[in-house]
Amino acid sequence: MSAPLAGAPLAGLRPVRRRSRRTRARRWGVDALGLLVFLVMIFPVYWMVATAFKPGGDIIANTPVWFPTHPTLSNFSDAIDRPYFWTSVRNSLIVVVSVVVISLVLAFLAALALAKFRFYGRKAFIVLIIAVQMVPLNALIIPIYLVLSKAHQVDKLSGLVITYLTFVLPFTIWTLRGFLLGVPRELEEAAQVDGSTRFGAFVRILLPLIGPGLVATSIFAFIQAWNEYLMASVLVHSAHNQTLTLWLAGFITDRGTAWGPLMAGATLTALPVVLFFVAIQRRIAFGLTSGAVRG
Amino acid sequence: MSSRSPAAAASVAPPYLRRRRPLGRRLRRAFAPYGLLLPASAVIAAVLAYPLYYLVRLSFQHYGLFQLVRHKGEAIGTANYTEIFHDSVFWHTLLRTVAVTAVCVVLTVVLATLIALLLAELSSWVRLLLTAGLIFVWATPVVVAISVWSWMIDFEFGVANWTLTKLGVGNFNHHDWLANPWSGWSVIISLIVWGAIPFVAITLYAGLTQVSRELVEAASIDGASRWRIFRDITLPLLKPIYVIVISLSIIWDFQVFNQVWLITNTTPSPDYYVMAVYSYVTSFKISEYGLGSAIAVVMVAIMALISVFYVRQMVKLGDVE
Image (cartoon, rainbow over all chains, first blue to last red; front, side, top):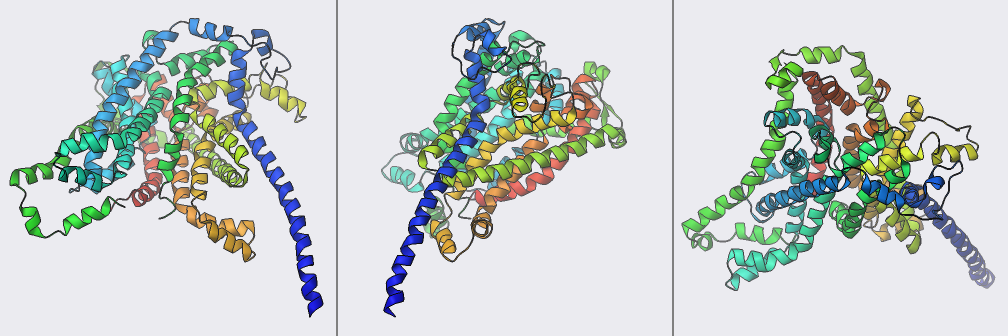
């Protein structure tokens, strides 16, 4: 009896140690695989930035130059000097900021109703808001174009603002409602008991609490409107009214593309989006999945 | 949760407590939500509901250049539908769209699942790096992504041709990727899948982290293989997330436009038509707005069927009682 008992721990020890070596090897393998996936995914982004900083001779090379060893800013100055760059930036900013501000005000009121009141038709409205975000905008562009052309809003920034509300507003209502739901009702009630009016409670309690949510929502709305291409391509005809995505697309479709300046322009177009996105990404992933597994 | 319980308490509160409030304030409180919803509802009705109604009406009209000038279509009944249903290009386009969507969604979901599972196993610094990489790709605007990809597949100096030739896959020197629809579509599908992976992978990974570790460990002590653990524990628990990401992916990929339109230099040959492109070309290139609307209505109808799954799951998750 005692022999097998004595032998057992020894026999048990060996495989454990071997397994730990094996798990370490496995760990290395997994990490190497993770690095490989990272390199494959990031490569196009890297290639854009690398090309943007390379001098022309390194871009048009029969053997790719993998690192910008002679970095230059000339592609950026070429891109910025191309006609209508600053006009496009200004147009994009005007359109996007207007859309975000209008959506935020309208959506905040609606989200307040949906999150803080119970009333007849509330559920129906929520279902509607979710469903409406599924309407394919690529299909709506035909009637929108015809209606706007009747109202003389084609080739105008105001027409573009109206159009962008179709996708930004429902999304904003939905996201803000989520943030408002996260505010405990007890806090507001406590403020009201303390003699504050409903409005006072709103300003002093609710607003600071959902501040980060408001910022995250407006940034996401900003990104969506900033990236839009199809609607703008149908609704804007003249170069001095184009948005930044149209300006960039005009670059791509040029025959005999100047790749260096194009990549510099692409980098500049992506820059604000990437910065904003990194700032809020935690909230996005969380907002999408919080509570999803519990159900 | 915390917002729900006090509300429930209020609704069962003794009636005398509620009667104390003056009538004016009660009325104001009853109508307040409708007042708050009014502005947003009016805008949604104007920019979404009306165009949707108008789209359906247009699909029963002849609306060409002449009608465009007069801003008035001519009712022609179901002639547009008869025409597209007898049009072989339409059927090919529909089939192609379904096939492309299927390939893109399957590739996206499978690869994203593998990446999510990989993320869960990585050491923390590699995980951070890969997450950051995914976020950069996610954040890349689609027009920017298309411009980078068209540079990578450039027939003269593109990095794709050089790499594939060096790897010995074949002679890709001066290979024009878009000349042949098969190689063209493989580029477009890679571009779509590459752009779609980060959202799905990060969402699935966020879901994975919420799966109870004890459950997985218990199963692995009981001798269950990794595949069985994934199939019998992880997958059922993540099902709600899968319903959402799969239906969203189908909806996004079915209406794909930009990637096809811009990579083919805004002049796609019929081999590159998908529903959105065909509807666009019919409306805005040959000015048959009624016909284009009929194609768009078919697209909307198919997407509506798919979004039922998404909406149901969202309503279930969205704490709508």
